[in-house]
Length: 446
Image (cartoon, rainbow, N blue to C red; front, side, top):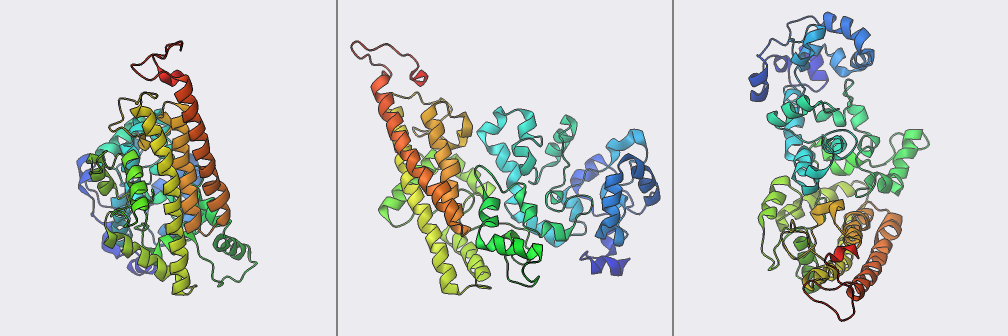
């Protein structure tokens, strides 16, 4: 058995005994993972959940004789004590897959649950969207959870498991081959604000890999997957140079660029009106949402260029990434202009700034809870169109960069200017009364 374990990348047979983390000790006594009958589990579940049994039989776990009790404990032995089955957690997987578990905890996927919980709007959504599988929680569940959060989810009957690894290595096959395919990323990395699947699959990179999957290209043809670029050498710490929001510190030396990025950081609540850090900056640090030092950004950029250099000349790769940097700047100049238009409406009393906004700027973290049409348009400009502008550039997809990103941003600025002009004509500023104009106590009704 020990030889099989090593063959499949496990540490050694000792990983199957003990190794429980403190959170499991508090709820379940430490058991001998070899106790109990694997045959009993399979016999019962072959009728109750035959799909699970079939997947397990196809897995490397089955080939390595890793039975049900290794992951789930041996306390659940009857139909009426199913709640005694140990909820699987990355620490549990880490008993055998220590390297991958450690890497995962250092990456942004491990923080996905915490990021969702940190968003103000997450606490105003229906539970089915935040903690279920019908909204944010369906993808953000990949994030590492505390013992208390796991117990809360279990008590509320959330419709997904507690392990994070099975988001990519679908249970109970837990296939490395499946998780190595770009389609494994597709479920979450698609759509409104992170259309990476659409960008990748229609780029030359993605098309070549899909053709290789179809057998049109030779199986050894160069064709990068998402994992090639973002999980170099199988590293489970998935990070990027610019981070998810493409804002970073220090500010650039170019004055216009620095002013634009400062405005965006203010709309994110990371900098105050004077440009000084707020408490949200500490949250951004904790959640690893942005690169906050030049060294950290350079480290990730060097890793990416090294990966690109496997197929492309280093100079070409560097030049292409610099073009992506420029698209971030160009998008930021447009977005900052739109932010200031809305901020001026607050300042001049034409828009009532929600009390929850900590600064005189619109708050992008309010998401779709933004209260007026012009603020909604600004949020879409930031969350959808700006994202597609720079992400399309970095994913080598000109159509997304231009038609799905840059061009709509131009239209957003025009629309926001026109909406602001109309508001200034139709709405009475707070505390003022225009002669002959109808009184409007709540200018947002306009």
